[in-house]
Amino acid sequence: MNKLPYSEGTVFLVPLETGGYARGIVARATKKGGGLLGYFFGPPLDSPSEVRLGDLEASNAILCVHCGDLGLINGDWPVVAQLPRWDRAQWPVPCFVRRDPLSRKAWKVVYSDNDPNEVVAEYPTDYDSDLPPNAAYGYEAVETVLAQRLSENPYRSGERA
Image (cartoon, rainbow, N blue to C red; front, side, top):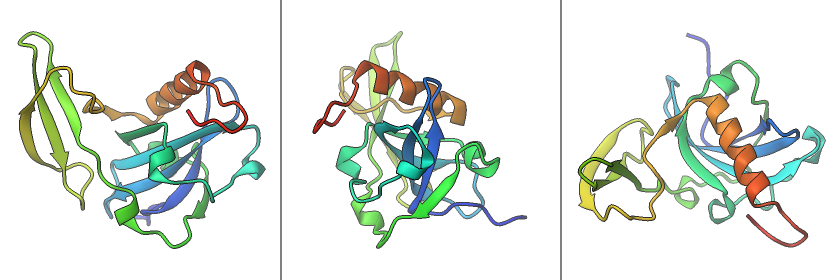
């Protein structure tokens, strides 16, 4: 098996359907690949040469999701850097919510800190929980969601989405 082109702390670019790029960071990954937990950031960049690393913090992310790694493997999501002084404790694995719309029941989903694909616990929670939905996105779906978020909440000078 070939070595993966990414590891935890890898910074990469996501091409947006609307043009330009968003930045992403691999927060959790397995050695065998197949999926990762990624944090994603605006504002959109016009060019890969505009990549900055200094403002990348978990609290600034506009999206944090489980997603496929095919975009990184096939080069559609170009790797641009390794985050200096990577500290996984600064990039926590959030809890997610799984909802059943028929019963209007919901569960808080907790993932392993070591394997982004392993659920370690589920607990009943409020159906209207503000936790992010428990979903795994294909890499093209991430591109679509990022373009939507950035167009719905455009950056202005000094603002964050």
